[in-house]
Length: 297
Image 1 (cartoon, rainbow, N blue to C red):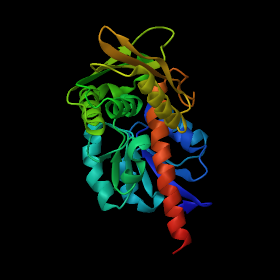
Image 2: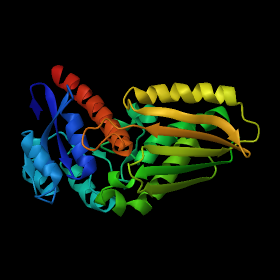
Image 3: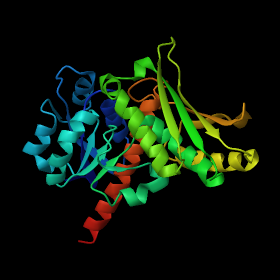
């Protein structure tokens, strides 16, 4: 399952997320796409894959079942409902699975927090775009001020960046992001809100975090937030803190913005970028370990 010292991967799901992922993989030095599979033969993603010479299929996960040697790593960019069906099949096939749906089946993974630990699991779940953007900051808030009682995330993305899969997963998005927020930060109470903004021109992805802290040390919090943001930028270049932390009406407020790379959709689609960048980061880490192990076999 190697091509020119690259580990082969497969992508299930040919929508916005799968297509953006495909183009990012094309730039990788350690992974290569051996299969791009979906259900819609006329999707823009399928046409793109054909244009760049990537094998395609309209049989979704069935194509991997028929040819297990097509890949070592599988990205699932379909929907939470579909991943429930896919997960046991991929486990039986022995694939390392990176789930980009909010299914909550695999081990939750935020690369900047638990990448090494997650690589020991067969199936990892990348939570959501909002989770990737905000959970690390929530962890910083709780690490700096463990007395924090409440954290709320309000996310806004351009309507044009939300494909059918994203829209089908709204409820799962809220639940999974909230669960990750509580799990990784330890905050006693949390809330998550997502807004699809139809504005023209499309708005950039941004998320605002509100935290209830009695006596916050803003300078220390700012220093710790910036350190975390710098770590995230190592694999999500468009990640930036645009506001705060400040105290506003008794709450600490922080706003983070993600500018996309412009791979499949324009730069406003930072919500695609942050989760596909996280996915590629985890796949490359796994591939490097796999290649190293093969070297010593």
